[in-house]
Length: 274
Image (cartoon, rainbow, N blue to C red; front, top):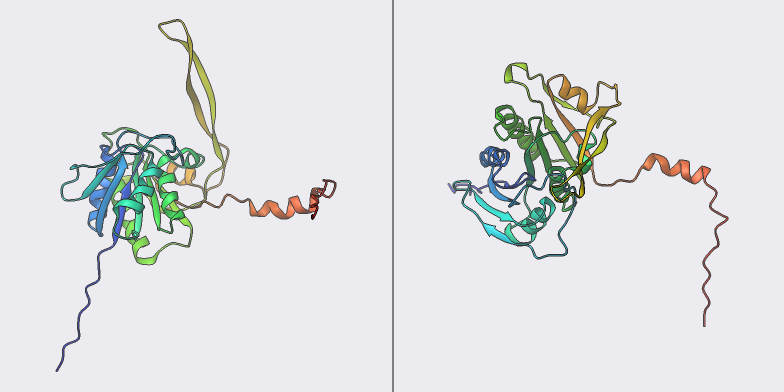
């Protein structure tokens, strides 16, 4: 009797990046967790890039160097932004399109409006633009000495779910993990983004040469009383999972503008044929 040929299923290829820099404890924790799920390649900024949003480098050359920081995990540091890291990884380093891109674990929140400014989420968003399932992970503790035990478990579980079930096209996940001990963790909730914002001020100061400079300060204000938001979940000990898209069209406003605005008074362009 002829035996059936057994086909070896290849391991998932997982790209790991962040915005805190390649030496941050959060990316080490994330790379180690992803290493249990597949073949991992790390490409991350060589210095902290928090608050960079979706910035890309266009006015200076990019440097990309291999580093030995993660044991037997292949890793590179990049002189650019988190988005640069994803672009370079896909174009120059990875042997094929990855099955998953994970960004983080960020030291600090990226819930609500923070998603707009976040380099962590923008790196994941760039992967989604490339057609790669992507997740951004953030932990609500800014300290590099933070206990990431809970964040590790949430990252592993959600990455495994995405590898098994996929994501809707052009969608990424913004995941935030509360700063609570395991004994107080309530679980994982799929949420919407809360309506909140930073009320900002710029503190005016004088440098040693007598010149003015400004330092951004402010406070975060949540205007949203809903119990289905990421802010509510985090305040009540849950990890929040918000599906995010890069299509910024306010689809619900198209019909309103079309029916209420009078645009027929604008001159029409005419072409003269010769």
